Image 1 (tube, rainbow, N blue to C red):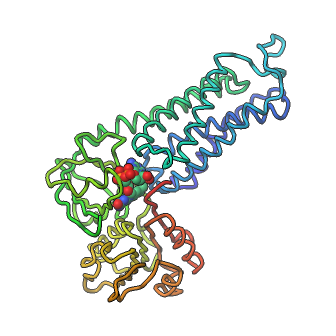
Image 2: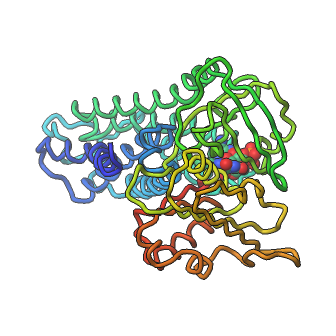
Image 3: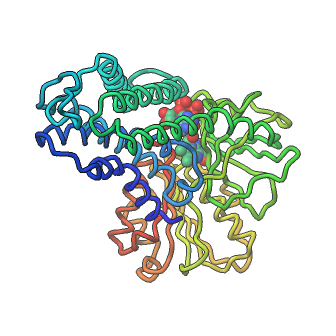
Length: 439
Ligand SMILES: Cc1cc2nc3c(=O)[nH]c(=O)nc-3n(C[C@H](O)[C@H](O)[C@H](O)COP(=O)(O)OP(=O)(O)OC[C@H]3O[C@@H](n4cnc5c(N)ncnc54)[C@H](O)[C@@H]3O)c2cc1C
């Protein structure tokens, strides 16, 4: 399934309530009443689909990319919030009990205390969730606490909203729509059961053992793990997986990390992990033999099977991890494609795997360009950030036209590199990137 088909599928599912309501052929009400109902139903279908978007589904992340999926999740949550804000205030007709002569409720908005309580509680809860998600870092909650309250709160608010729509909606309570709401609510519940229950059970049955942990650079560790009693992971170089330390692979305590090893190197998998918060700061203290758990592979940052003449890899800091996996894979497979890696850091001690990067296997056409923004006095590499000038110096016009470019690093760096590549004539479908945070 391509990204275009997924997009069409999403649009059809979310628009269905509007199409089905129109299909009922009922007499129209005041235009603002119709807009209010439409806004409420569209917001509800968008919110229910948010569970699918934020769930971990390789079928989506492989095609669209997890970061883009999460961006869509955030943007659509705000869109739904805007629709929800206007929904109750647009109604013009009077609130009243069902009138026997007005079976299609053309003249009144149904006044039902239970339905209203469902609606108002859901409205307030969803507002709170969207507000705390937008300002997550300011709330002071740990990521895990926020994630739990966000998931459970969203499910509760959605169920209340479905009940409200079913109870009170002029259209939403009719058979084709009622079935749709309950099906979509069931899908939302199943995504939670899948993520919080089934995935951890599967992970527990496929444990991994730590083979080694070593310091790879300043505050950065290389963790190597091997499958413990199973065949391992069927992944492509550049993809990522959710890693769980500890005795049980609880959903809330799984963190995403790019795989820095190459599939061709065997069943062991390695990660480059930078110390950031509670989980990543524990990596250096892990010992060989310890059990860890993995969920993956995910992500679209991987080389396509063909259609390019060379590979440009552009990494910022620990964003080297997936690109190192790709470089290792190309080396191991003795691929003849020329490769250039631009690897930027702030200081020299942050450069990871320097010996390996410079150990060029014979017959390979590779160039490693190191950049430091705060270099030591004897630094011979590029000085400064990875900017358009450096990219222009590093890649020729022909390379810009025919190579594929993969970028990984901080969000701001990715944006600026993407812009530079496009300015230099690289077609946008030849630029792939992965962000390390969804904020
Ligand atoms: C696709 C992807 C690939 C990544 N690859 C690497 C890598 O190869 N090497 C590396 O060092 N870092 C990588 N990261 C970043 C890494 O996941 C975070 O640094 C790590 O999860 C921080 O967790 P913590 O508990 O140490 O810090 P915390 O202080 O708990 O979190 C710091 C920030 O990390 C993010 N984060 C934390 N937990 C999660 C989670 N469970 N799911 C999603 N985001 C979370 C949030 O933005 C949070 O604000 C990657 C992130 C993503 C999304």
